[in-house]
Length: 366
Image (cartoon, rainbow, N blue to C red; front, side, top):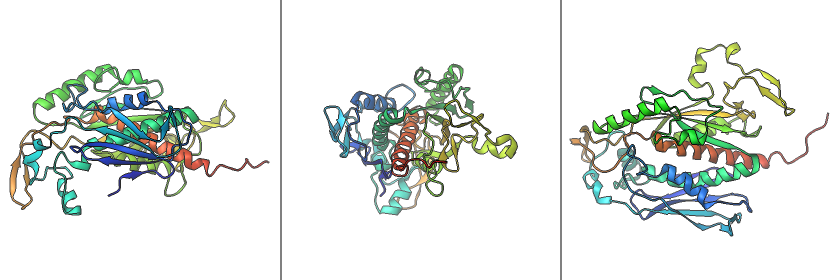
């Protein structure tokens, strides 16, 4: 079971939804980085359940403990182990799912692959696994800010049929965090909140899109063939629970344009390097970052666990009717924002460290 991500900056997550705890081991973080526990906790608080009436009401503080790799507030260069203990686990709330496969969940496929599954909240397939990703991403955030001034920010740009109008260049963290929807468009946020509440009452769920921008990304991150920066970002995003699609830059809308209208013209930059007058490439050309903002969008399907009755089968392949119990999100989008940020940060930190092993000789003259 693959639980590790990255090459030079590597995160390995562990734990199950209703076990003793969940966490991550980060390997490859350079030594002497000033690491703020408060900053890690801030990102985890944005992901945690129970933070508003729009999300699952499981009550977890998600308080992180750093077990290794840090001394007197600075990284040692050794593995950084972080743990979040589960305090509101209710495994028996899932007894009714022991022999039933939930529609659009990993129940059947996991059992078919491994011959058994943890049916208590989904085990490793639960979104609670992403705690480790967010904690590791918070370490990557502090590293990238220190070495390159990189800023990564995501927000909810649509839910169901409600689209937000957001200025990618101007949006701030305060704008995103202004409402529990994490949509920085006040009008759309109000409509999204009402839609989620209505859908929860109806026993249903909604999907949507998270948009993410990475600012001040250095030129040269990514490789030109299999490890293109956009390919790594795409794989990272599709590894998130409920993620079903990724667009970078113009994405699918680019298919409706011509090359002349889609190309990003180069112009002389004030900092002595070429810049582009548009950014339909989303900051990546030929799989390598070009110094413009990296912009991507991730599509999340409606939450699979809903309280309305659905047709399914049990382990003996008998047709049954299921009305799921327990605590679940009627829409994953507000809590998916820090997940998209975390995976973007992990990809950029990994590629930044890998580039350090390539760009070691002085530039050629002439």
